[in-house]
Length: 133
Image (cartoon, rainbow, N blue to C red; front, top):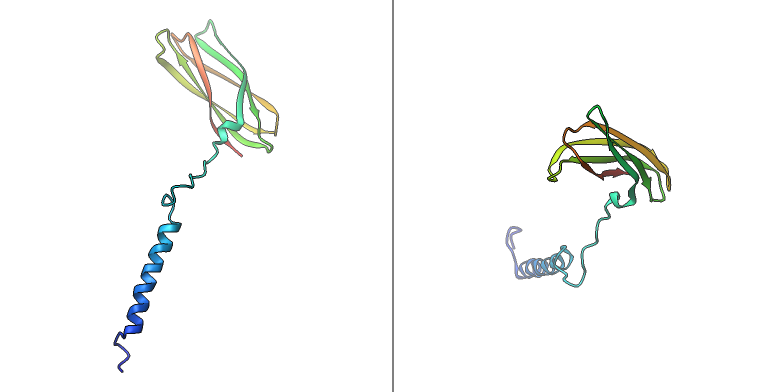
């Protein structure tokens, strides 16, 4: 028999192999098994909290916001970023600024302090944007 011919044994092996591969592919492919929900990816920002946040408009037009970033995780936080939005009476954003706090030990808090030119701002919102461990 010439080596290039496909006999019945090899043909059946190819068909059975393709079927078995398809069965395993459908079992292993994510989203194909309805009784197993996907594992949630934890958001590192949930392990960092803002505390003692206070803001005051200054006579020079600068709005001063200060507070602390507290690390709730059991290891040191390399970098945390705090975003502060300044709002007018209607709730519209006047301006936005960012504070970066580095090397927050486990269970400890480090201060942040921002000043921004926010003419017309009467309130502010502060939130943690980023936390890297």
